[in-house]
Image 1 (spheres, rainbow, N blue to C red):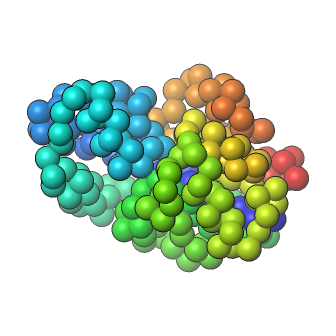
Image 2 (cartoon, rainbow, N blue to C red):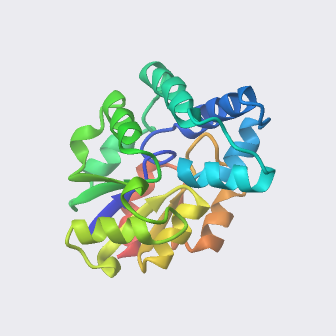
Length: 216
């Protein structure tokens, strides 16, 4: 079996920080957003799809350097403020399966997140939505990861915190454990993940091993 982990909100508790910075940069560009609105609308969505949706819905064009501005600010804050999800390293090391990361973030952000939180050594490979035509909730990224890791989709188990991610893994024919331990998750988030297709939901990484065994 192959374990596939999302990064933001699963391996690292980055969503509150990244949503706040995203909202700040959008607002500075003349497109007002709150951190809560960014979290609600774009958690688990690639930056390319986020930009496309904002421009379409608001009938505007974001500055050409929007992504560069956002990443420059975000990466600087990650270097100083980003923390791993509590207990995640121990939880992953308790599982005897090959594992990889499949994230909507760009490769540079994934690598930075894993480096500053001391998790880089845990994974056999890293996959980004930039490598496929469609990001989550389409199944493309998870199917790409499975192919690259030489594993059939029905032998993959995904750990995801976002509705889009759970939908993507389900569409790929994979089982999904929903995770609600991130700082961005509200009290009803677990039920939303179940409705999206998660077969099990946990709120603490200490419960991951039992959830994996229960999903086999």
